[in-house]
Length: 132
Image (tube, rainbow, N blue to C red):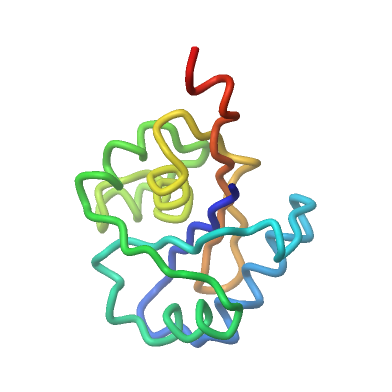
């Protein structure tokens, strides 16, 4: 399972979210059919652009509670002081993806930034690794 984590500034459009997702897919060699879920912080639950992008792409959107976001944020690859000040995590996209993909998940690479949107992919740990 691959989870696409999305971070954004307020008021992003679905087109901006989809463009960032596609750019991240190209950079990291991920296909849309490989992505199981889209994740974003619960605090962004009213962002119409993120919601519409998930619907347009046929992805279930998971809203990540702040506590889970912070727990997963310790495994982020990138760090933004601005995002830490605003959201309490070093990368919203990376923390969102990691939180939903599971405790033993790993990022496929660092977040991808396109304008006001960030996107990161996390892969669920292999089943064998989860049982050992």
